[in-house]
Image 1 (cartoon, rainbow, N blue to C red):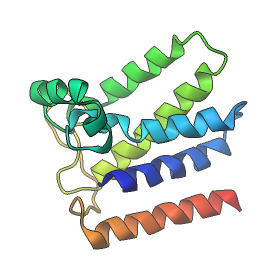
Image 2: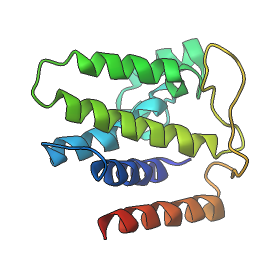
Image 3: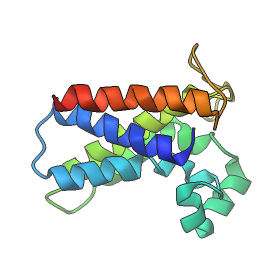
Length: 156
């Protein structure tokens, strides 16, 4: 999926999650979810986050490739654990926000023809039964409409 679709997915995940758990600081939570929706693409030097953090992105891409370790449960658990160690009163908002955003990213990339290596280091690629080509105007359009429906439904 494209970066804009991931941003929308992170927002949709945040809106849906916000209504299921207690959040003391919605702003920190929503910002964390949107950042979380971008983090898995740190392994792609031409992604929204990769272009801004090439010093991290290029070595990660060279070592692991795209949609491998940063699109895995192992990476998600590492980020979850790291954020649990933050010495701030907002650590739970950051932790839950990043997690929601990253999970939305995983789901959206599993909706592409290539899929993701969710169980890295196991090489199997996971793809949902309904998928589209990355960047396809029709596919990304349908996904974006679906995400907007999720957002609106949870705001009503």
